Length: 493
Image (tube, rainbow, N blue to C red):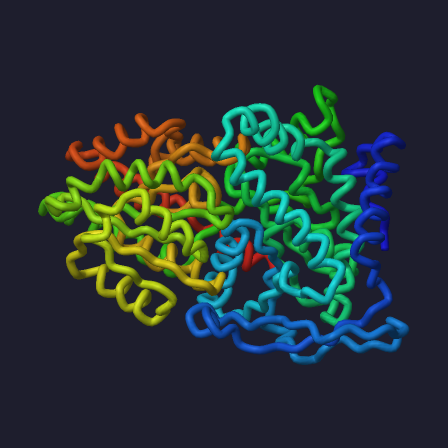
């Protein structure tokens, strides 16, 4: 296993940075164990929730057994000609959603996506390390929404500058050595498309030969580096920032990434959304012209943050919902308590609310009917299963008029977007990019500005239509083809 913490793209780390990285790995190994010499047999099965829609097959790991790794044989169940692994973790909803975009594109192109969620193998050191860090990140996200001081002095600096440093990547690379065993019984020549840096790093440490590291954000951070993989980005801004490792060691001019290590591909978007852009945008413009209720999709992320902002939006829209000038989709993901708290805080919304709870077929039927039918009132969506919780937003996106979201992974989706306040400084660059290409608003950093933008969407005759026209133009320019391009490069290599 090559040591990737001493030097990152030719940039030598200080001895103190390297020693800190080693101590980080030792800390996790002491707490969760080191299963480097454990064999985890692999089993393949169809994903019960998005298997039929996206062709996804789950990669499951059986109970581990201590053995000489040299005696183990990788599973032969993978399609070695048409298969690719989508390596991911659940950290919020964003990385799962990008994984679904890659799987959707692969399925549409005739390939088989194998789903490896490194945060689901509870018997492994890998999952224990990821879960511990995920819990901290979720806590930080929630606290940032509740405390301005915490957000200003802790969360924003960590997300904006802390994760940006090469020293952070050095520690991550050491920790990822503990994650490599999950790939032990996977054929080394099958392509791995990782939608979080840890699966990419783990795959490289495990000796996987063809790894693509799908970078989600528009703000270049060393957090996302997995040397040895091909890094893909969604914007030209990100490409330039990553190429020179901009600001990743203070003001130092660093040795750049090689051209062979980095590729601009465009936005990672599901085939189902990209292929229907023209018809969906035309439907939005037609509903606006005919005076139909404007449909706002409110999606609450995996950390469950920002409920208070959504409560203010719903309260503001209630008169328009009563007058059938607006309608709401509210997806609380797998956070049923958020819906309960919204009803408690806004009891008047009960009379307009229809609950689509844990009935996946009902959710799919509603999303399909809404493409051509009328929608009124408030429709709440909750699904305990993570796949359904995330993919519900994708299904509803096609028939909504405006997606209301923080500027995270959804910044890059081809639907008119209203951006509420970010969670972490890195997210602001998603809103900036979206506003520049004309498919989303500026980031509304407080409730009054958010409500002002909602009013503009509802009252201005051209605001929504302009975004729809820009989305169609962006599609023609290939801006939303990132998922297809990632799959093409994965099977080429």
